[in-house]
Length: 443
Image 1 (cartoon, one colour):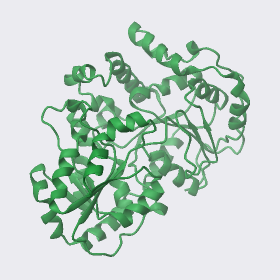
Image 2 (image 1 turned 180 degrees about the vertical axis):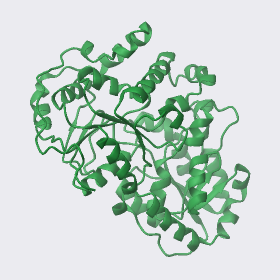
Image 3 (image 1 turned 90 degrees about the vertical axis):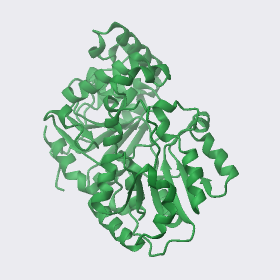
Image 4 (image 1 turned 30 degrees about the horizontal axis):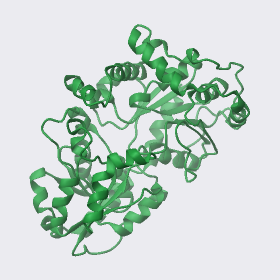
């Protein structure tokens, strides 16, 4: 790849500025909205936690940063694996990567040079940014925390920020149905205003926007510096499809988010899959479920309670514990025949159509990395196009799910596996690295 333009071969210098109060990090962009400003200050105060006893730990972390590297700032390890894939790819090219995680530890299998866990303290983040003033920052923050780029600029106005926005709330929260999100308790009105202000700030003020949207975001970007990335694993993690015939009971796998019936149907109804799974297993199909990252046990029960009950009652539905992504890819290669992105979409869903049309789920590429063809609902238009273009799976109408088992048994599975090999070649994360590197060189 060659040396990135930020290489200067010297340690990052200390900045003498120190953060002591929450008012030093409250973004000025909200000052014209009194209610939003007050709520943002309250939110920041809850997570500020001034802990001067951690200064030695912060100083030690900053002392290891070097300008030829990248500082990845991540909310938590979980459902958005782009950072995990990028770090592997950058490190393979000799670019040092450093991780600052806000609400979880960085997993040991991600090859950072060094990491720091802020333990939920935004004060730690502010101190690091104030001291590490010259290293490029890759910020993975969206939705409620999309304002973090403003916090970083408040602390260090010259910071070079390249922000990954995994899901645009402007697409998810359709303005026409905004009241549904509020009445169902998903967001407050102030949450929504803050997210919209934050997304405008990202588009106008960060050094570069990193996104996975296929075309839908181009009008918003209006020529601003940006790069597209799909959440694809690196080649080193990919597994060749196993030579085999389909078994009599075909094995489907869903790896990722689901919701139980208690989650608001008008917001999350597409993720209410328990009844769909009940119907699918009557076709001599089995379904293996790997949950998304959910640290809190109560939240896990809220999201997966229905599926725990199904797995307890029905032998053809199996709910496993979450495992690290490299292990998941190897496991799926052996335990499943198809990866699924199959959902039902209630006609009164409040989530914006742009969200479903443009969404690109990491599980699509996880399945391909495991050597599996995929089954995807036609409503997920961008992913459906990727599957049609590669031939590495099937795009299905809701009306076709009742005969899914019969259709799968008539497929040329070997031809699908050949298409998966091509998809693996096309969508490895390394293929996105040149554009991201060019974006970060542009300054």
